Length: 152
Image 1 (cartoon, rainbow, N blue to C red):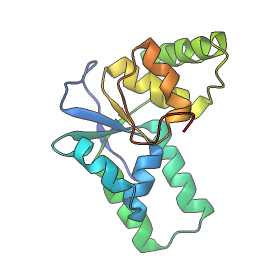
Image 2 (tube, rainbow, N blue to C red; image 1 turned 90 degrees about the vertical axis):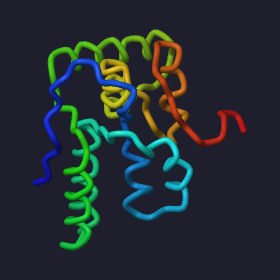
Image 3 (cartoon, rainbow, N blue to C red; image 1 turned 120 degrees about the horizontal axis):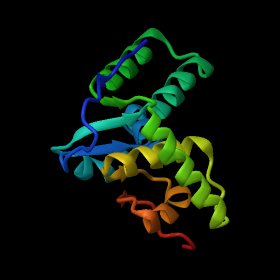
């Protein structure tokens, strides 16, 4: 199983960027939408949540990826800093999900883990999933999203 480098610092610098699962998928599949995000990833150290790692590994199993594709996935994960579960992260997740509920926002558990990671470590989140993360800007999320604004 792929393992990323261990996260050792509580607050990361502006040199890091958290990559959401959908953008990782664009990159791995060589989807043309990945090109929208390369400028945001350039000269940044890639970070992914343990949640993203789980989602990616699940896809490989469910879609019965071959050895070459799994190897590329493991190499990608290995080149990222993987944020593990922690007590402070769980507390931030609880805050995010509670705030979502208060605001009447359907905040899926996986998206909440990813948003909580970006908020806790104070790093930008790069995602194409505006619908699930836009509201988190109001609670401090630095959102980088090239998807069209909501309602368009």
